[in-house]
Image (cartoon, each protein chain N blue to C red):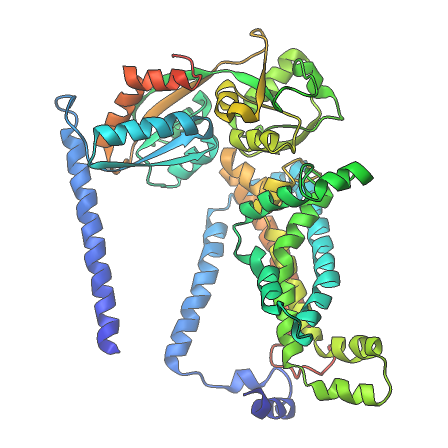
Length: 286
Length: 267
């Protein structure tokens, strides 16, 4: 499919092809249902939200601390996911080693694991009494549970698979001949990876990073289990929302809306700027 | 294809009619329930009990006894923070019985018009400091929890056990060095039994429930707060007969004996 349509798309120009395509009406109806399904919960939130309290909630120290912590930790987790996830995706896509299927399943396991179970697993590994955590504590005095670093660990654990899967898929679809050509022209392996491979998969890399970031920002179960809940240190926005829901549902709704507004703004901004879906993948974004 | 598309909604329709029928039947049953007290007879159907996390062991045991006495009934429990449960019920969660670890959250239920009849206090509980087995750090009392080197976890102030903990710290004049405010009392207990936290404040019953995995340090009576546990049938209970029968078991001799065996005090 991609072989025949890609040149056409390039010829027609970016972001135009989809607009002209006519979908069969059942597909349109189903797509409409999907839009409604995504939109209704948010419309419901907006409808329920106590707008009179908006000022109080935005001014509250808890919410500002939680938002700032959420932004910092989710960006740190995204960075960690990129730094470790891209080489892993590259390994999975390019190197045929025994047990590759096993490693791939392992790398995506945290997506299917209930997050609370993930948190318990993190205790068992990186906790103070965990398999590795006890040595971190003994040798370096480093403790992850109940710290901001623990929040980043929990978020990275659940978010990295999104980046690995996206980038691996892009690497598999990549035309090897470009890289081979660069190699025959004398480029080193690292030069080819950083100057040819990475720029080519850039849209997928950004999409994967955005997915990972979004997952990290919304992370709840592993965080509250592994990192606990302490305002300003480990209480991220989802935790603040959950606890507010128990005593003051109105406040919880407003906190949720703040989180949604911030995420939505970032997603829209990134999509329009970086992720034109039908843009030829080799074109550099501006 | 078209045929299949048509049969699916009709199946759905049948199912929803069946559900409506069940709801109507149970509403009818609730009208009759005011008449003579049906002691000795068994109840049937599904019973859903929303209960405070601290009741997990005692109510699970009671649930088994209830199911044995009423073979046609099946009991499902939802154990979580009292505050989380009351929020779920007010949002329409299908609960028959609500048992809270404090009066405040029960008041939220009754204030929202979501309880049928007056709640009854069926047990009480005390708070204790939970520590690793054998108390290796020698934690003697609440004042030790101000030590910043210890990892101390308590319930969040939004949750009953967190309210009690902050009252205890206030009356002791202790500025506790808390590392995490957990979402319910069992999360506090788990963190201590896993060895990730050094001390926490939980209910005395939770220390008993932990068995060999944790020890308790009593809090002096002048500092401790007595937690009262009320129970009520919810206003929209799908199975109010079974709900009342369950509450009767909790308040009866057998229920009180089970609660006492788990460390709860009589009301």
